[in-house]
Image (tube, rainbow, N blue to C red; front, side, top):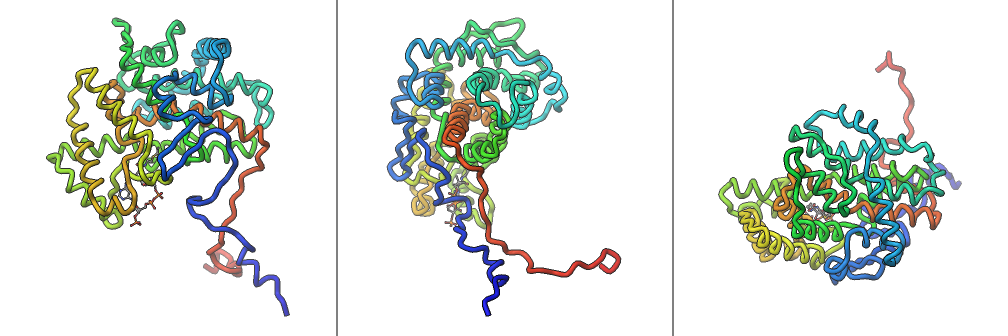
Length: 402
Ligand code: ACO
């Protein structure tokens, strides 16, 4: 006779795709990516064009609202952001409670989550009416909060935003101004940062963005959803790779600069556990178009600033050695966006433990755009299935008999 209980362990027809390597989780009109051809476009505009011609806030507007802003729309958007850069002083009390050595990504995720408690106009699931205001707050305040960790680690007072400055100069000013000496924003530095932030601004359904969408799909509010994205970004296999890359390059330098030794170690990743950070990508299997732009930007910035960073030479040597190695070629492992970004951040004076925070500032418009799209298209709650591999039914044994 047919016994339905026999089917229970088989969980019906479930597609198992660990890591979602081939599973589309959503339809989206924001970012187009072709991993074979190395194409990346935001709302139909090529990443090459945007990096060369647009400002980061224009790109943020494009991602979030779907079109490039007119001059009037841009002025309204930018002015609103300028007016919201100050952070509630009570948030400082939370910040002051963190250990001085706390990693800035942990602090950032916590403070963005805390923002949901500071806005009484926000309740989970009911914030739609004020979405634009929440978006402005996030874009305006994230750079301010980000600079606090850096200043505190140095034992310096934190700086208030200076709202006569544009978005990127304002961030640089909060990072580098001292009470005794105003920081003079170097246009080369500001432009390099502009390009880096644009290149990081969205990347369709990557780990942190999928996290934002999954958390948001339960109708959790935008701050909680984005805080979750920041936490996902922190991991070394995702945004945290940019910190790992520079630490790896420094180790290679300290170890005499022999890149082939590290290539060999990475080829035996399964036994050594060592991967070349900044190499490989889930979707780009020929090249990462962002890495191409960044590599050139790294050359330009270092030349313009007159910085001679030996780590850049090690990076180039490592890239060449890996690209000529059968292991990397056959697995289609190429430098990704994180490989050269750290070299630029270093040249700009940004410390290593702030690299992933820079990535978060860049990725914020993408997270916001994806969260907004998910709400507008009324996506159902995300709830993956599983194939159960645990024990079959067992009889409970009371504690005294175990
Ligand atoms: N060094 C050495 N071997 C590697 C590397 C690497 N960096 N990356 C992948 N491989 C090998 C794997 O061991 C595996 O080998 P196998 O075929 O013998 O089993 C094969 O290449 C495929 O790797 P997977 O881990 O299955 O590929 P996946 O798509 O799951 O991972 C990832 C992609 C996480 C980016 C991976 O390439 C990696 O760990 N890279 C280093 C970390 C990094 O740079 N992350 C940043 C990504 S970009 C971003 O998030 C912005």
